[in-house]
Length: 113
Figure 1 (cartoon, rainbow, N blue to C red):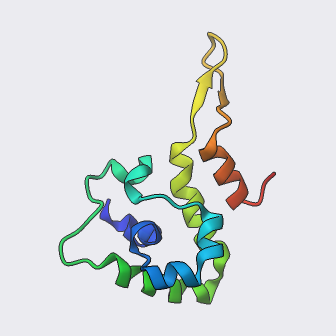
Figure 2 (cartoon, rainbow, N blue to C red):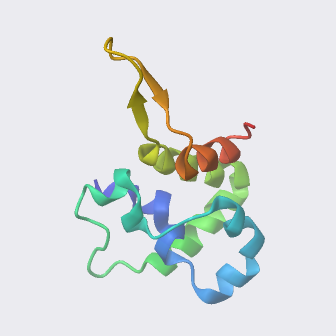
């Protein structure tokens, strides 16, 4: 479960200098603390002794820059989709997506209206 660290290093790992430099991009991602994502907080492994999230985030940014910003948006949307809520609409176990911040953010990151 700790293998998700590279996918969410941006949540807690970006230092202030990096956040300022990437402010517009990170603002668009609407990242929260890693503990606020259902997929991430189930592992009880949000921090690891001797692991520097800031260093890992910088390494991730260099690696992802080689691929593109699309990869970062995709990784962020994958962890955010765990926060999408559903509501039962009838007694046959059919559901609808609850229109909330999570589904709006995931749709935006995936390029959907």
